[in-house]
Structure formats: structure tokens, C-alpha cells
Length: 252
Image (cartoon, rainbow, N blue to C red; front, side):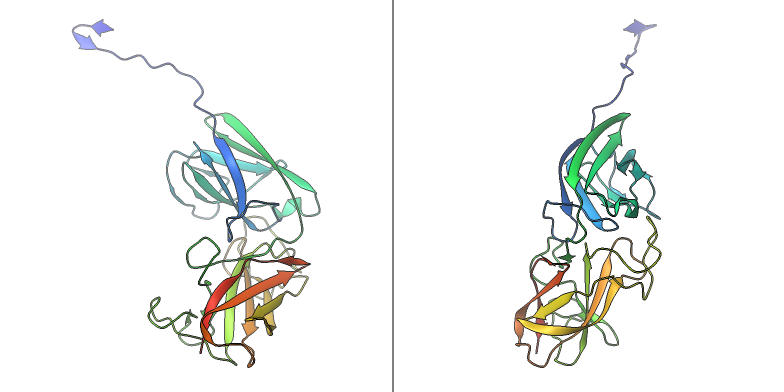
């Protein structure tokens, strides 16, 4: 439209395009499947947010996006147009399925998935749940248990040293689960996991909430003297009859 020699654009005012949801996966393994209360889940799709970035304090809304699970707000940890990382609300514990409402631009898309008690996943350095574990040698300073030089300060771990694994989907803890609140020390899992290192069972020193992290778990193990050596020794965790992905560490 021309007005006094100037061009004027008229924009139709209406609801934006609805978000689209493609899949819901374990944040450690990126494997689609059931969700676990209190744990980290990643939703992939399109039109999920107008920007990308991590949240400060796990808010209920991030870049115009909100997610609810069975009517309870899910804390948002990260959001982008194609991905969001959330904590599945603890309030969903004991239920058999969850309907997630993903809302942006005033429109909502839903996704219904089963809920189970355990779906363990171990975090890896590539963010995809394969290869080198995001595992730290309990030493001063703490370093990644990988071949020397593979990461800053990394080195192989030795038999008799302690290793910290990080994961999600390890189920209920003994005290004070609060949606949106980071874990604290000594809040142990109600079930003790079994961890094997190169096929050898390791002693689990601690299994519980990862202090200061939201929806993440920490498992400290003692590397057995019978464990094999090498740059890619497989390590796996099982809890409540469910097995995790297989990742690797370096042992010398």
C-alpha cells in the first residue's frame, strides 16, 4: 500500500506455526524409548524455540517454549529450534505413561510415551552415548580416563583407582526428589547398579544424584585388579534389570 509516497507493509496477525515433535530420547544415549521420572530427556523436532542456548536455573519457559508432562511443568535445560533437553518431572514416578505437551506460539503438539522405573544411560564424550566415556579418575586433579593426550590432561586409569561415571535414567533416589532442583551428595539410588569393566564386576562405592547437576546421576566404582588393560576397555551398567549403553575407558 502506498501512503504519502512511502511503502507500508501489512502483516497478518495470527498464531505462528505449531512446533513439531519427531522423537523423545534418553539424553545420554540418544535412543528413543520410555521416559524415567527425574531423569534427562531430549526432544527432537522443529519450530521448538526462536533461539538456542542453555537455561539459567532450569526455567519452565525458554525462548518461547514450554513443556509439560501429564500436566506438570518440565524444567528446561536447553532449547533450540530443533532440540530441547528437559528433566522429566519427579511427579510422574509410578505412572505408566506420560503425555508431553510441547507449546510455542500459542499452539501445542503432544507426544505420548511409556514411563518405566529404569532406563540407564552413560554419558560419552561425543554426546551420543558411544565410544569414550565421560568418566573421571578420582584423583588430584580429576582427569578423563582416556589415552594420554586424547583430551586435556587425560590418562589411563589403573587397577585400584576409583572412577566416576555420569549417567541418567537410574531411577528413584532415597530422599527428597524435587523437580528442577540439582542433586546433592549422598542422595543414593534405591537400587545399587552392577557395573562391569571389561567383563569384570567392579565394586560400586557410590550410586546416586550427581551433586549440583539436574537429572544426572553419578556412579563411583573401584577398577578391579582383574580388569583388562587397553585404550578402549568396555564398561556397562545395569540397574533394576535394565542395561545401559556400552562405553569405553583406557586402563593401564
